[in-house]
Length: 261
Image 1 (spheres, rainbow, N blue to C red):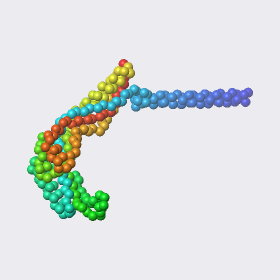
Image 2 (cartoon, one colour; image 1 turned 180 degrees about the vertical axis):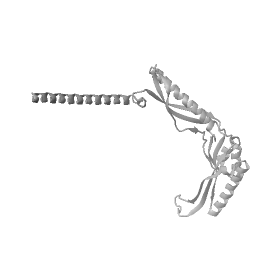
Image 3 (cartoon, rainbow, N blue to C red; image 1 turned 45 degrees about the vertical axis):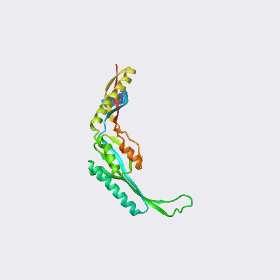
Image 4 (cartoon, rainbow, N blue to C red; image 1 turned 30 degrees about the horizontal axis):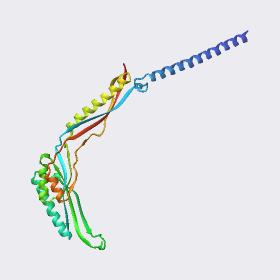
């Protein structure tokens, strides 16, 4: 009898340990499942759960009258000797600079854009290419004109002072801040219009902005052709110069949330 009672007690203890272990495993598995469910339901996982969005681009541009002009004005001199070429080119360039300043152009708005000294040789048939036939000096000034209404008269003054090369006339807006702000507003409105059309077409409504970024803004100035040489430069200076208009443009990229109707 004592041995039989011990065997029954041992069996009961073993069954109790097994039940306890089973309960521990079940509780642990339940805890793990709850934790996983809680992680999936965190607010940060909203995008991961598939919140629909729509991304569009927007473009805005504003046409404004330019208030500044830029032009290359220079002298091109050819003489038999280098000394003669240097003397003549220096005299003409100095006269052109003085004429620009007398017309109201600030010294800081006159900059040397290009300067070269070229040795000239005769490469024609039966000629000796080793012999120097002359020297050419080119001195180009980049001039910024703050009053575009005076540009035509200023070019005439430059030619009369000795300039025989005028080209690269362009117009632009010196301060684009206000125009860029207006173009930016138009670009955002353009993007929103596109997003609303896409949302409606897909049977949804447009939600709040998720992200927005601006691309490179810029301006498109009217650029005029090149005139070189005495006769051509005189014609370009005598002709009336019309600045036209300048386009300031802004591009944006926007992403909106989409919501079910």
